[in-house]
Image 1 (tube, one colour):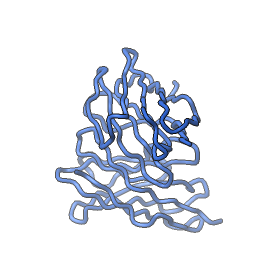
Image 2 (tube, one colour; image 1 turned 120 degrees about the vertical axis):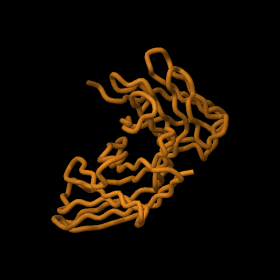
Image 3 (cartoon, rainbow over the protein chains, first blue to last red; image 1 turned 60 degrees about the vertical axis):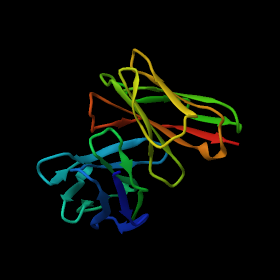
Image 4 (spheres, rainbow over the protein chains, first blue to last red; image 1 turned 45 degrees about the vertical axis):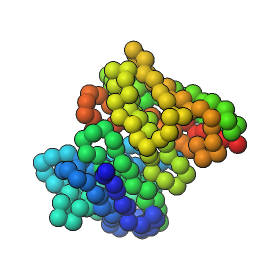
Length: 112
Length: 113
């Protein structure tokens, strides 16, 4: 079955610095990959997704992620962090069978 | 356009009791998935309903059951509650099969004492 590992349960960056959240996946078939963000006391919001095609995916709020099959990775980046980016981020993988598997999450803190 | 709505927001139950959680999907969506998110963890897939049938199920015991109504809304039922069932229960809706873009509701926080 598919699975996701998010490296680093907590990441702290300064405002304006690069954000890099790491995600590695395991899948027996070409995967569908997702990044979600969760603000306190809220549900999950889709940031971006990769299904097929271009491996560099652009999402909302200036985030992007690159699918690297050789590295089984789907890391999330943003060139310049904003205070409003502070939240919990989840990477998820699906094999197209409606069973989406989530990582344990990475809490992003942005320092002023 | 209302997004995914869930009720109630919070719920406190005693061990051994039964609970029903409700979800209304985003307008135009016909598929509802349920997830359990324990504190400090990522969501875990419970099951998915499409055309009023359970289409896919995660690794959860039969104490967890569900239903989808003709208007696409859904219920999650949990019987014989255990302390370990305390979690945030998330509902997500989407359109069609298979589906990749799920919209999540705010969740129901269940506490079992």
